[in-house]
Length: 134
Length: 147
Image 1 (cartoon, rainbow over the protein chains, first blue to last red):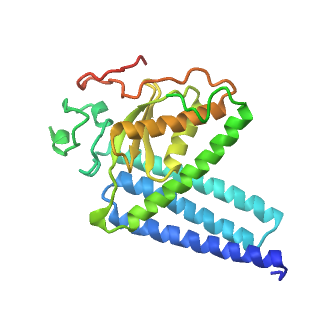
Image 2 (cartoon, rainbow over the protein chains, first blue to last red):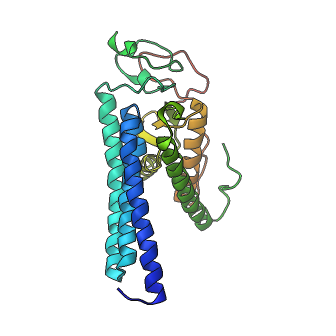
Image 3 (cartoon, rainbow over the protein chains, first blue to last red):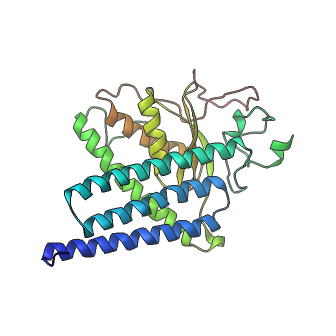
């Protein structure tokens, strides 16, 4: 590493980015335990974890900056955000199709009305599990 | 729902830049909000989730893909599925005070995205209420739309 002022500044910012990324991933891990259902976990955690990895990649880039590394880091960040997004959507869709109902605190569920076994309950009421079994 | 800060008449490049900065701001605010809520004690968590059917103005495959990916990329909101036939996005929101608040938020994001993607955005107006779909029909809501 070089000891010019710019080098030191970039090194410091890089370390901050890496620790921010680690903190984001830790919070995402806590979220996995605390959030009540599949959809909350997928939306809150899926992309937060993606952001955490992206932040670590950017931190590593700043610590060891070359133009080739910049290209690699950009590709890695874009691919990471894209795959975590598509993964979250796939998991949520698969969960809904496999009867994983949203937690009872979900106050509106308008997707329920499009199901084949929907019994005519109003979409504005709380989604309760009994609507599924009838 | 015309947004006054990002009207369709502004130059195209300005609409693109304004969307990028607006999205970056929303992305970090949403991250902050979700992080704070996850770290709150469970009893005082403010999560208030809802799944809303949001009428969409997207037409091309690229527009559908981008809007659903950008909604999912924002922490706290998640596209579960879309119906191109009925032009509806099914969105799960983590902090939805009411169903309409969530739908408005999504439609504002879509308005801004479409204004950035299209050189001439055209008519983006659509109802806020979910269209009535399917065999097991719900009691009619105003603003049903044609597929």
